[in-house]
Length: 300
Image 1 (tube, rainbow, N blue to C red):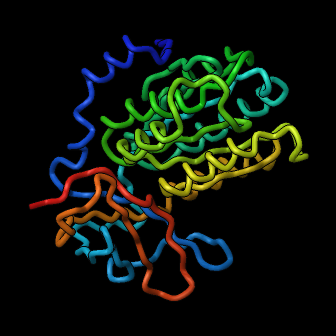
Image 2: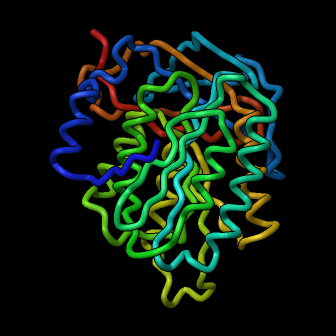
C-alpha cells in the first residue's frame, strides 16, 4: 500500500489521536538503551559483560536491570530516501545499494526484523509499511523519481510517529544529500520525535558537491547532531563501493549492539523533562555510542 503523508493540521491531528501523550513515553519507567562500543582503531567490540558498563541518569548512577550482548531484539528499520531534484544523478546508485542492504538484512538476524520505506522531497510518501517482503520494497524503490525540494524534518517527524509503536529496536536510515528546504516541522521537533520513538538515526550523506561552496553545511551538521544524540553515526560516502560499504557498516553495528535497560532511581526532584543519559565503559580505551537522553518524568 502506498500512503502519501503530507504534514498538515488534519494529518497531524490524526497522528495525535493514535499517539499516546508524549510526556508518558516512559510510562512504566523502564528505560531501554542500545549501545555500540568501539576500540581506538574503530573496530566494534561485542564481547563485554554487564559489569563493564556504568549508566548515569541526570548524573545519578543506575543499576542495570536488563542486559543483552549482541542483542537479537527485532529490528524495525525505517528507510528514508531523499528524492529531491538535487539527488537525480545518484538515485539509481542509491537504489542499488539499498537493495543489497535489504537482502543482507533479511538473510540473517531475527525473523521479525522488518523494513518500512519512505521517500521525501517537498512531501513525504510512505511506500511500504513494515514488512519482510524485500521484493515489494524493491519494486517501490524502482518507481522513485527525483524532483522538487527537501522536507527532511517532516520525514523524520512522521517516520518517528510510526516507529514509536514498534517492538524491539527502532532504526532510521536516511539517504540524503543534506539540508532541508521545504519542511513545516522544525529541527527541534524532529529531534524530539526521534527521541520519543527511541530511534537510532544513521544518516548516509551522499553529497553531489565536494567543494564547501554551494553545500548546505548547516544541514549536514544538523544530521551529525541527530545521529550523535540518538546513538547513531553519519556516513559520507560517494556512490558505488563506498555507499555499499556504508550500508554494510550499519548492518554490522546493528548486529553488534548491546541492549541495556534500567529503572530510574534517585533522580533529583527537579529533573528536566529531557533526562540526560550517559553510558560509560569501565574498560580503558573503549568508546560507547548511545542516545544522549530520553523524555520522561521523575519517579516519586
